[in-house]
Length: 594
Image (cartoon, rainbow, N blue to C red; front, side, top):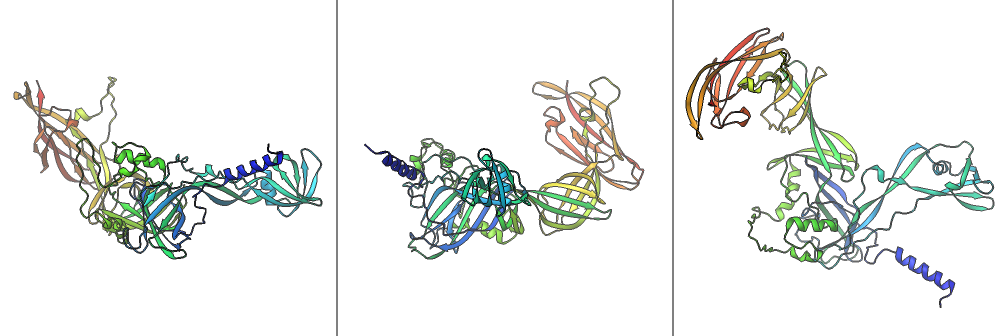
């Protein structure tokens, strides 16, 4: 039988064994620090991150870093020698991943909010501590003890898998925390008081009062949080301990997006100032002085909703379900990611893109070297520092471009079908003015304009906001400003004739109704206006006054007519002087069921 002392020793040994990190957890300190070399941000909330670093290999000839991404899109996480593309000589021969918790710290000035913070702000001073139980203690405030360490890290030791990558079958950890709610005080509830009889450890809860001469009430508050991290262990072929190696890490991840916003400033002249800024939302990872490219256009990333198995075990099952839905989702089917996948059911195979291979790895690298590649354009910011959870506005360009003011009216005919309907029987009906004041901006800058909201200012006063659509250099874009109160339009229609049984369609007879609409526009402004009048006509337009241009197209369901009716549009461009009124006419035919 074990003695009481022996039992205590056994319990202590078991406790140490329980708290010790698991075997193979990679206790060696990281040998590699990665620096973000470039970030490419897309408007859909994804970003491509390129990191590089140089370090010395450990005793096993491997580089170790705790900066492995915790999120990455399936098939986009690549590790390569910094001097060459993936698959080139000198590239890694093995990559293993293990999961751990990394501690982050921050400080911020503020007013003390607890007794332990009062103690921390007055370290080194003499104090009298009145305890809830026992007598008072007098001495020097010596130290505040740190808060308990976070939960022991959960290591993901690699199992037998492919020679390139491995992952664990352990349950996936909880999702990574986000935002400031994960931060906690770096100090605990214990502090040390040095008295004449010796040092005393006291808990904040047992202190009834604290007296300190010239008490300080402000401090640099220290906070800490635990965030999940992936430790990457990269081995090079033939590498020995102590060698200097350079590494490049490339991956596409969610959580970083940019929104383009414009400001258009008018000064009454023929030129307008157009400014574009990127409103950046970062929920991904900290950026410290990284060059950033903001992409106009969106390449196709077929598996952008699927996580890489090199980040979390749970993502591996998701990847299997999406890429090979007929496979069993168990981890025992890892070897099914082979060169051939045979489905018992017939399916069409999408051929690989021509030229796919190592060249694709460097495609983004080539794109970032210039301003345009294929169907994409890159606005570049030389440096951006932005923490996770923060927002920023980055100015991209400013240009002074030609501007024209036009007024547009696009009524729908027959007008009664599209006009306001008063269902209450009241003779008063709200009048909707359909004439719009718009700006025509000519892009004479060397860069395209991407689609984004635009705020219009006239002499510093806001007059409207709408959308600028994609505009390449040398082209024009029309930007709506506001409904024109002083330029108004009215429509009067009259039936000219009706031909019964003019058409037979699907067993029914249709009458051909000929109508004429008069569109009248008045300009109550003190300046002349250029008006573009373009009504949409349900039916076939056959005649237009004043050289109106007629175009007849296919059926438009919005006309509310039978399918055998086409849709027409008529366009006039009119110059209206101050106080002038103009009228145009269009004759059109519709087929109406008898």
